[in-house]
Amino acid sequence: MARSRLTPERESELYAAVLDLLREVGYDALTMDAVATRTRSSKATLYRQWGSKPELVARAMRCSKPHSVAQADTGSLRGDFRAILEMAEEHKMEEDAALMRGLFHAVHTNPDLLQALRELLIEPEIEAFREMLHRAVERGEVAPDNPALGYVIHMIIGAFIARSIIEDLPPDPAFLRSYLDAVVFPALGV
Amino acid sequence: MARSRLTPERESELYAAVLDLLREVGYDALTMDAVATRTRSSKATLYRQWGSKPELVARAMRCSKPHSVAQADTGSLRGDFRAILEMAEEHKMEEDAALMRGLFHAVHTNPDLLQALRELLIEPEIEAFREMLHRAVERGEVAPDNPALGYVIHMIIGAFIARSIIEDLPPDPAFLRSYLDAVVFPALGV
Image (cartoon, rainbow over all chains, first blue to last red; front, top):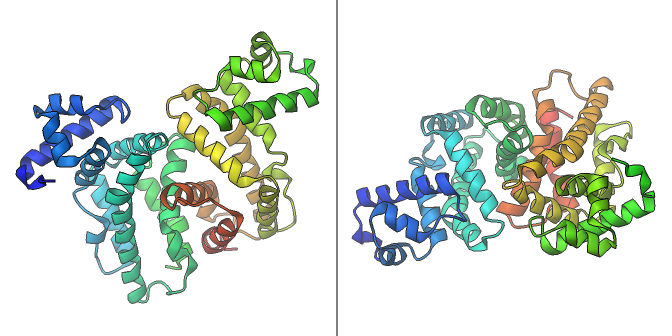
């Protein structure tokens, strides 16, 4: 794939249009035709650049997150989490949460979407979390054999899903801060 | 609704047929016609007894769980959780987890299903968890102002969802036991 043929500006523009369409119609109703029309490009170009709808959507999601978890290197685990929450606040976390929820439901009937999200979005994020936790262990903040180290992702996913599905409330930063203090830090012994 | 017209045996038989159909075709493809045919009853009877497909499905799910969380009253919080896991083991938790995942995805496009599941399944379970935690507080096992008391459901949902979606593994009892020890008990200070 010759992704280099597009300028970074044009690529961002395309991704923004994909996310707008996703918000408007959802994953199942989003077609490559609609993306082509909205972005005034040809379907052939879209397929040449991204191969498939799942990959286009996963890359658009990835590029909408301007900072990765891994960049939050503040010198303490609490500081790193605080920095992530601040980035999230700046970038309309609630809107993204709605998008993620929609995709999360779409994966049920689209295994190729799950595959693309795993490779392009979920695994890099998990890896970044692991690095963040590894730094905390290296600094002596968390015991290297603390069994909660393997479950940080589970705890955080639970906060997002239970908040929105069970409580029908947005997972806003104040809630997440309280959850980190009540659950994640005590489990990690921080 | 004159639910009393059915014998308990007949009701169980109907619910079992609904769950079989759910496993076979999923929520969206499950029709009241198919339930009527499978159970040799009339659609009129089904609607008279249950009002709607979401209510029928939510009641069938509820009755497939022969024991409620609230019945696990062993005298300690660890014992109560152990008893829940044992009940779950006896009752093919993994099969139920697949069913729950399917329904969880179906709620995205069926708000009336979410409503029925909330009223008939989720809220009674959350209430039972609250009672279990309340007993632990009364016994002095958990501090009454421990902020994790409000997040036990979040932690447990996270274990189930992250395990199946992110890790692509079943949330089996051994995993849940390890998660309780690593996350839930330390957060609760037990």
